[in-house]
Image 1 (cartoon, rainbow, N blue to C red):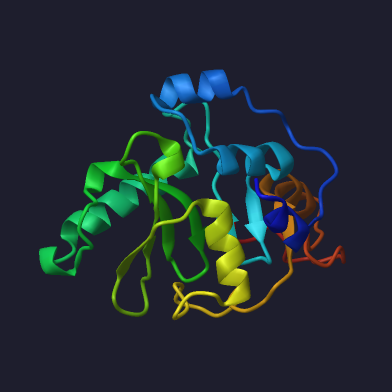
Image 2: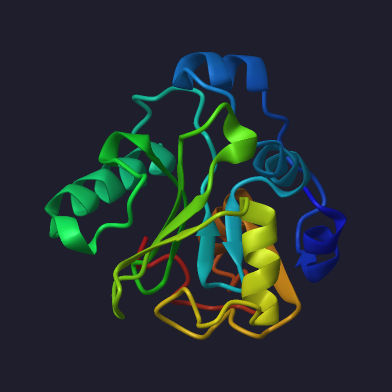
Length: 199
């Protein structure tokens, strides 16, 4: 993960469960981009500023909690249902792999094209504003830094929660679930009797 993205994130976790990438990539059938692997090794699956969920790569594809597989299938179905002349060229449905979803139901993907994962562009489905699909010829980490800096010609997301906000907090899904189960708001650390009621 580029050092700049790491500097922008204040992590609320101390320990990250290790990922056996040989097993994960063997089951998925491809290598993942190096910046994503470095992000997962440093932070794990979780949320940026309680808005953007960075999806982890479950080793077992049939796992009921495999959000990456679920959102990838969702992205592929959405792409296929989009009018053809509204789809950017050079991408096909089967190439889409989701790595992030946000509170507005936007989906952030890679398109598995080129000679390897270092060439995969970021493909964004922006649910609430047109055009619905955009391709960015950069990797995940560079995309997030550019999003935080407001460096694109326009906000690639439906909402402005991360746009032009240079620094963010990151909370792992594991720690978030533990806090909710204990009746604690994981983002404030304060008691919340409603914590965990909705998921």
